Length: 112
Length: 115
Image (tube, rainbow over all chains, first blue to last red; front, side, top):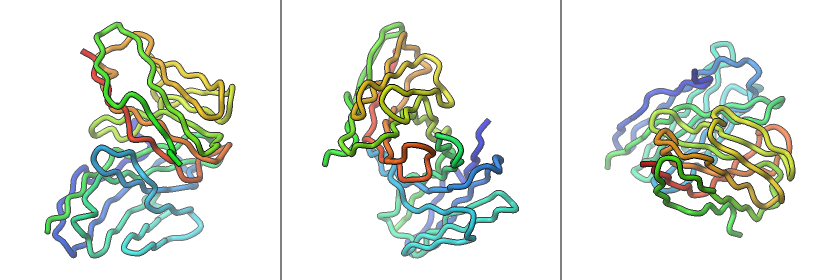
């Protein structure tokens, strides 16, 4: 049973469009929510992260929205570019633990 | 800096064989971990270590052993390979010695096929 559920599994967006990936979690002890980006043949790399004391965090074209009451968070990619084509993973962890739990991943393709 | 280095990048095993995946980091990170990546399953934690001499199980530890004799190295051993262990394996490290609320640095992965 996955503690972090991610959707959709795959996403196709036109260049310049908005890409939205959603995640939901069950464990209320989670207090750190990062997103990782993975290009083919490479390891994942940290993209952006949020803590539950804020509802939104923006870095360039990437924004995390966080809804603590619904136990959901999402990644928005504005003005999506072909170079954004990659697999995206949401994740969550608790400060009391030593494990980062990942969602199932979303394969994003941005068409030119 | 090399970061996190994994070897080998590719390996084919027969059922029942054993092998070790190597992982080394040169960032003096206390925390190291092994994940496996399977389609639709994301990344699942196998084992982790919060410092030399300290290891613990993750979500899917069965069939794997680890040890941490130095800060730099964290090898993953497959004791008796099974087709279900066909996967891409990632080693990751972090400067955090407790908790994982900082950046994880990943290696480039080791693709293992068990026939």
